[in-house]
Image 1 (cartoon, rainbow, N blue to C red):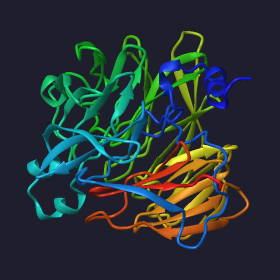
Image 2: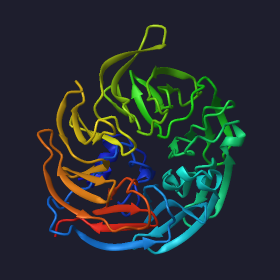
Image 3: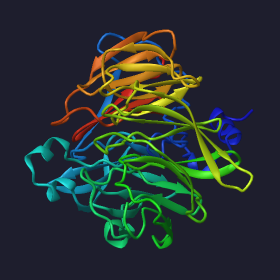
Length: 418
């Protein structure tokens, strides 16, 4: 019999390098498939009063909203210290292994008073084998040795691709696919680019899109039997060929603030996108025509679940996440957009073993049955404060542990059944 994690790997044709030897791996933002769904089992189905046991907390990681990636017995995140951006690695008990500078922070470049509440590192490090990749708010893309933190290479993507710094800085968690690294500098010399992951050399640069960048991250999917990378700019959902960078299709979608920060979801050839500030949700079906070009059909649109930046996940043909101006936590039918339920609150979430882990931006995390029938909460507790600001870092479940980051501290809870 195969171990469940290995069986999962075989079913989804995932490379063995994705999985750490100890079975605990979450190598990039929202996990190995970027769907924000953990494969852990044997987890607590309800929580005692006060929540699960706090195993340890790690301090000194810097202020920010970066989540964590986990691979090879190490945990990686990013934060701002003295207006500089740092990438930090800790072991599975929270002991700091290394901390390396990755350039100036966004706060150092933005001196307006309104900027202070939004300061801090955004992008989550991406782990591939023995290399950790991180894109700073100011465009310093760096490859670090996962064991030692030694820098292997770096590229200033704003300078290299003639791009202006976005209003809130770059927030992307870069994507590794095969030998390439994909990111969106948003420049005249390359809106979307592919770099050789071992050297940082440019493989191709697409200049077809002229929009401001989005604040989301890309994913790889097969649509109509064509492998493609899908993401969002401030003004559209778009797809490109990962081999040559040619844009395959695009669809106008955004909000009046030009601030789209939610990753798309692709399932069964359909693409779901959401954006805050009243932008709402949309489900698209891109289809390849006889000449090889793609057309895009709108399956439904809704004002609901206009996600700000807490993320949306798809489970059993239902969407779960929080709206922005539409208010509250939502469950929508994926195929129709019909609302199944709505509950008060706003925040980020993840999923594992039949439960949603919903982190309110004010610091309360709730354990909720993943059902389309109603918001059915079976436990909650208050996460300690780790500094200033709201609880915007997305939670992670991996290896029977719940990781919640607030500002300068990472809190780790034991959520396994006794």
